[in-house]
Structures are given as structure tokens and as C-alpha cells.
Image (tube, rainbow, N blue to C red):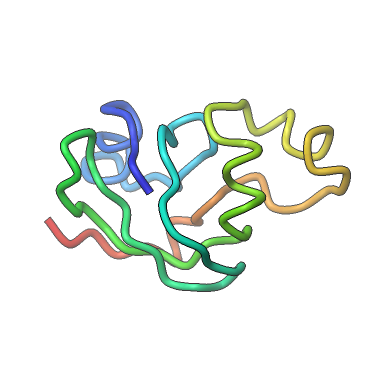
Length: 91
């Protein structure tokens, strides 16, 4: 997944979770709980994490606010795409 600059800073400097709003692109197919590479806007890997949603679901919610996830997906799930407890910075 590719992230915007704000998400990169939040993860690498702020120790935050990845939210849907910070995702700019999803590549490949994966399921919830799979380990996924997280890349900066240039495609450089900055972290890896266990996702809470499948690639199809993340494509539907990328760029959206966390409060909208349940409305878009049709069910209430996690507020985060990758929780900080399931994320390792690789930079």
C-alpha cells in the first residue's frame, strides 16, 4: 500500500496506527490479518503491518475518514487499517 506524507510521518515519527485516510494506493490481493508492505509516496517501504481488512475492502475505503468505514463497508469493523501494535517500521 502507498501512503501520503501525513500517514508516513504519523507512523514513523508519531508511532500512530494507519488510518484509511492516509492510503493513496493499494496493490495486490490480500486478506485481513495478512502482513502488508507500507510504502511512502515514492514507493519506498517504510513499514510492514497486519491489516484489519482485505485489499478489496481497503480499496473501497482508502482516503476516507475512519467514521465512514462502517457506512461504506456495511458493517462495523476496526477503526484502523493497521493498528500500531501490529506494525513494524522498517526504515
